[in-house]
Length: 237
Length: 41
Image 1: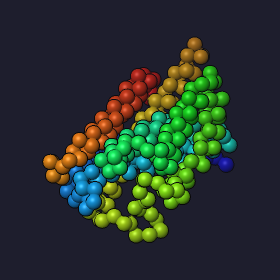
Image 2: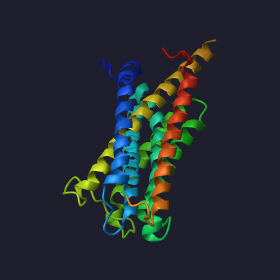
Image 3: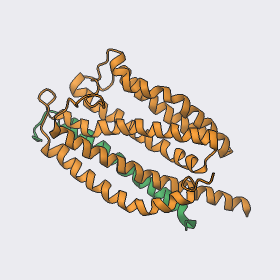
Image 4: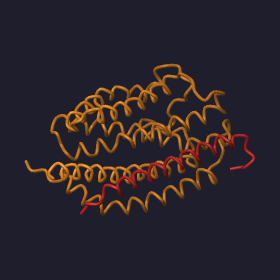
């Protein structure tokens, strides 16, 4: 069966069209999101203005998890079908996912200090997110450790698949164990326990982060492809 | 937001770090792409 959409060339043709649209939408959502997050949304009745950190912390955490799920999905394609596009995208996603994990951890600790009295506690949620950062670092280290890219990507993909076990642990750690971290305020199965005036900036900032993710993904995947083209050219000369 | 909030330091640090990191990472990725794109068609 001929599947054209998984070819890198097709992806890059489509991404060239989408790239400026994503930049425009990303800038728009960031501007409106920051305005509503800092100026128009009300303070929390218990946490006061410190709750505003949620608008940068929660989307970063969601994106860190989403990026890892996507990385694992693509890694499966790499291992089973050796798809070149999946390989390019997986390698490009790993540093972006690590960035969102670092943002989640740093903004979380800056929220934790005024609310819990400590920047860091060895809580199940915080520790499992730290493990997620180690998984991203391990993926990158394995990928770079081999002289042959083929071997590196296969070893890294295997780690990415094994690491999927950490995703449900992160998600349900706040329910399984007694944690200092609060449980989820937004779930698919019930009405959100968050007021619409706070839900709006959260949604806008999440949209901004999603567009930022795809802008970076296109940019880094194109860089990766160019690097490989250069390597092939060098090996031929 | 009331600008005399006792949490101003933490809010500024969180937003400052986020925006700084996002711009830095985007800039770095752009420079890497620019360096590699000599043969991009």
